[in-house]
Image 1: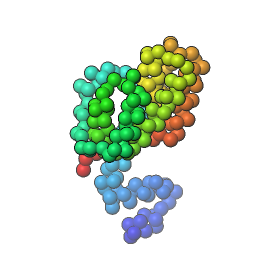
Image 2: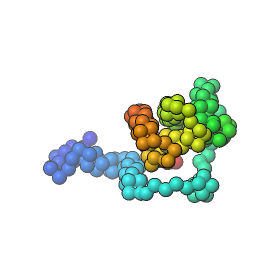
Image 3: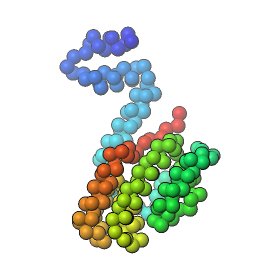
Image 4: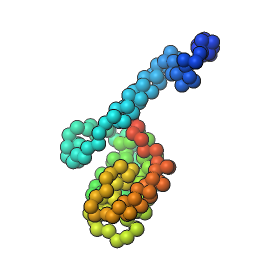
Length: 185
């Protein structure tokens, strides 16, 4: 508290409350300050980066698979994942076992399941607008996973694509799918 008082006494128009908070954190909790700095750095990198499409094979060459952190899921979590997997298994060709294993690697499995349930609901709302081919469903699945950040492909009309993007936008209000950096301390 003494440190905060010292900063408060010296507070002038050149500092705002966020700056003060950061300065205090830097002194009293350097670990939190380092994490915030790292997250801000990655946010700037993401903001200034370009989007590219790469194959799963190429992606697996440049990424490291995290370890399985949860040996077993509760019955309720397994049931929720099975529902999600069954809804998308025509466009996501992973077996249920591989699908579940991916979730067991997450540090925050509850958050991941909630996001997945919302994304699957978006996907189902979109594909139920009309009868669709497997190619169209796959395109919509990718569009859903990108939270609507894809360009319109040739196999959908502009009005359909706008409608799909609106569905995604309406659900995205409840999806905090920003990249979460997982650190090991």
